[in-house]
Image 1: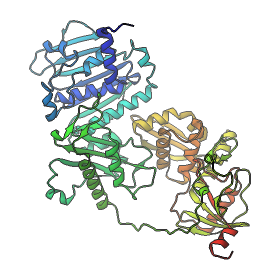
Image 2 (image 1 turned 90 degrees about the horizontal axis):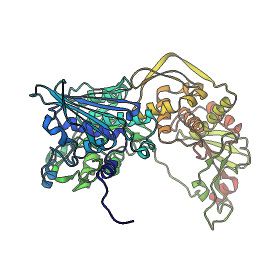
Image 3 (image 1 turned 30 degrees about the vertical axis):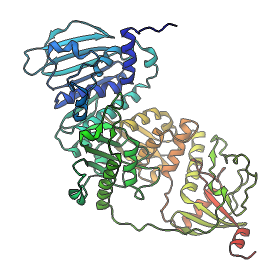
Image 4 (image 1 turned 180 degrees about the horizontal axis):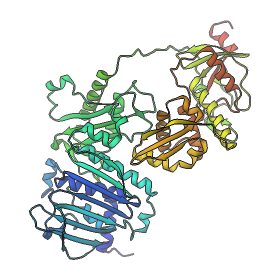
Length: 585
C-alpha cells in the first residue's frame, strides 16, 4: 500500500481518540473551559450516561460571535501564544484541542454571549461539518451541548460501559472539578435528577459536604501546615493544603483520594503512595484513606504538557513534593490521633514454607479450598513437618479444646496432635460464608429488618456498584432503595450483618465489590465480602464461651481451613515440633 496523506476527517477522529475517551472526558474538557472563562456557576446535565446528551452551561465571559468558528478548529486557543508560555501556565486548557476533538466525534452546538454583547451567537457542528453561526437569545455565558457521542465512530461507542457506569465516571470528574474550585457553584443533573450540588461559597469544607456527603465530611479535618515550614527555604515552591480523613475513615479503594496540583486534578502513583505512607500503622493494610489535597507548586517547576488529557504532570523535583505531602498529612494526623501503644511480638523459629501458602477458594457449592501447586522442582512433601496449614483439604478439623486468646486476634486451642492457632476473623468469616451460601441455596435468606430505614450517601462508584449488584444483594438479604440524589435507603440487611454497624458493612462491601471482589461469580464475590465485613475483627477481645462457640461452628464447616478470600483460618504446631523446640528430642 503506498504512503499517502490521510483526509482531514480521519485525522480529526484519530486525534479526538487521544483526548476524548468517554463521556467523562467531554465533561472534563468543557468544565475546565468554563472555569478558564471565569465562571462562577457551572451546570452539567447528561442523559444515558452522556452518550445521548451532555450539556455544560456557565456564566463566564463567553465567546464573541466572530470567534466561534475559530473555537472549534484544532490548535486554536486563547490560553497561550507561544511555547514559552507553558512555563508560566495558570489555566486548565492550553492545547486548543478540546472543542475540535468533540466536534469530530459528535454533534456539537455552542451558544455563547459575552456580557457586553446585546445577543448571543450559536454555532452547530455535525461530526466535523460546521454550519454558519446564527443569532439567538441567551443569557451571558456559554452553553455547550453535545449529542450522539461516537455515533459515527461505532468502534469507540461499543467500548462504552453501561449508562450508570459512565454516569459514575462523569460524577467523579465533576466532583474533582468542584473540589478544585470551591468558589464556583456546581450542579450535576443525571437523567433529570440532581446528584451533586455545591454552594460555591469558597469554603472547601462545604464543598466536601456537597461532594462526599455530611457523614464523610464529619470525619475529615483540615491539613495543618508543619510549624517548621516557615523556616524552610523551599516552602514557597511547594505547599500542601486541603482535608484528610481521620484513621477511622477508610475505604476499600482509592476512589476517595483527590490530588489537585495548582487546582488541576491529576493521577500520580508516587504522590498517592506518599499520602498512604503518611497513614502507615494508623489504618489497616488493604484499606485506603479519604483525602482532598491541594498541592501548590511554582509554575516553572511543573510540566503539564506530558499527557493528551492533561491527566498527568511532571515535577522538576518530585521528591520535594513527596516529602511535603508526607510531612503535612502526618503532622495533621498526629495532632488529631491520640497516641496508641503498638503491640510488639517476638517470634520463635517455627516458620515453614507451608505457612506462607495461601489457599484459593473453589466453587462455593463444594466449599473446598485448594492449596496452590508447589514451585517447579520443589519436593512434594513439606520439608518442615512442624508448623503447617491444617491439615490437607480432605480431612476434617479435629475436636479442639480452647485455651485462650493471643493479641485479641488469635485463639489458642489444643488438639489430639498438638497446638492450634486460629485466626478469629478468618474463622468467623468462613462460618458466616457457609451460612449465607446455605441460606441462598434454600432461597431463604435470614433477614434483619431495620426499625427505621438507614439513609446512606454513596459515592458515584458505590452507587454504580449497588445498582450493578442489586439482584444479588436481594438474594442474600439486603433490601436497598434509591432515596434521591446519591443516597439510598437500607430497609433490611442479612441477619449476620446486623451484629455490626450496617452502614460500615454496606460501604465496605460496595468498596470491595467496586475493586473486583474475590469470587468466581458476582454472587459469590458479594457473599464473600458480606461475610468478611460482618465477621468479628482482629483486636476484638472474646470471652472463653465465645471462643468455644466459634471453634464449634468452625468444626461443623464443610471447608474450615480457609476463609472466603483464601487465607488460612488456622496453623498447627505438632507435638513432635514442640518437643523439638524445647530440646526434648
